[in-house]
Length: 76
Image (cartoon, rainbow, N blue to C red; front, side):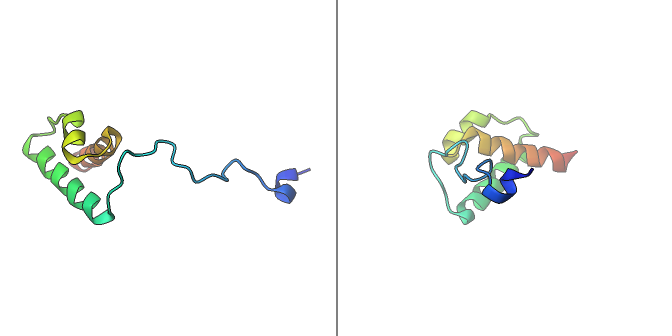
């Protein structure tokens, strides 16, 4: 009836990152960078270049996008 209960399932068996990052930073570095990006966003009224910030902080664009999405939620 429920074979997966007896045999297990590999549906969630992998901890692989679906989008591996080019460079990983320590948690403290990410927090510092996120705070800087937030300040920059506020000073520029949300008019930021995601790709430029990603290059400047040596992180993926998806990271900057997530940080700015968080900020936009705060600002609303």
